Length: 201
Length: 259
Ligand SMILES: Cc1cc2nc3c(=O)[nH]c(=O)nc-3n(C[C@H](O)[C@H](O)[C@H](O)COP(=O)(O)OP(=O)(O)OC[C@H]3O[C@@H](n4cnc5c(N)ncnc54)[C@H](O)[C@@H]3O)c2cc1C
Image (cartoon, rainbow over all chains, first blue to last red; front, side, top):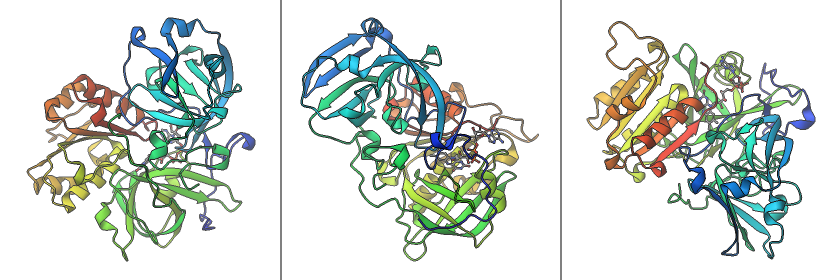
């Protein structure tokens, strides 16, 4: 904190509902795109979702099998580390609880892995208990490729880089290890309400 | 991206600092550059950005990201200066303030450098393909300035899309850099009409244009694409279609365009 007041700065985007916009964020109605490289391409015939527990594959669903799992429809606010927040976004997909049901493990952490090589790490407790989903539908439409289609992880209570696009599976592990952005100086946990943007926040 | 598994970056700390505005330059009718002195600036790599934070009288704060335009070589111990280049978006909250309200001598809060993936230094080699739309030129300019400062002979191509001739940011400096360097090619395209004597492209960047400007995929160039979301999406897809390795195409999206 350096305590500088910006002379004649009034601010134009004060949140209408302050309790819903975390510090340093502003509300946008667009759905912006952020990724480090080109949008990967994968044919649905080649798509699968895997759960790997301490190195061994425990579960695998092909696209059709994934689509047959029980689905949830829900509305959440999302917060991107590049400062925008979007309220009341509407999603449909499969709860991580459904995907991990019956998996026996002492793991405390999960790494989401993706087409294109992206990874992100999360405490298992943050993606279970109704807090995270693999979604394949946004706003009632199939999820567009630039937004992570065919399917992405959605963990709305953390900064949006944790909601890995083009996700292909979860690796559960006893040890925590930084993912892609986490290794590049972004925060390991990423709670928008505590403004945990960069590693030392 | 798989090969690019980065080293864990743990230093320097990303702290808020009070930066003093030294000089404000007009780049185009809507774009200004701010030269700032940042006490104990830790240095940066071309491609990185800073977060700027404005605070109103009542404590309300707004934060936005701005790329570093200057070469790292410009900021030396004892001479800790950086340049930001900002386009005014008419209804925006922060960019009109930074382009219209601030004066030399004012102080603003910023922190950085931030971002470790969309970066290039001479040590990364080449060939280098840079594709910019509008203010997307800013981080790529830092790369070109760094390349020139270091007298690197890595071959480099810049394809730069602007609306009008008058909207081309850093036009004269780019001309000078290209004139002084056989291994640097700068190609412009204008999307909203061009002056009568214009001899370069007059349309949005498309696969054909990329194929004619960029080196062949077999040369395995490192490609950096920066600009409005839609432009970055279409250019990066086109590069992959042309046969470039997706793992050598890095992108940075500044958000929706002002179009
Ligand atoms: C990593 C990164 C680096 C960036 N680097 C730069 C940089 O070097 N230079 C730079 O200028 N910007 C850069 N940006 C963009 C910058 O962070 C801001 O988003 C931009 O300045 C707009 O902020 P604002 O507060 O003025 O507008 P906001 O109040 O955030 O409003 C922006 C929103 O309003 C709309 N909008 C506002 N005005 C207009 C208009 N006139 N026409 C159309 N739509 C409009 C936009 O669609 C957008 O949704 C960067 C962004 C990122 C993520």
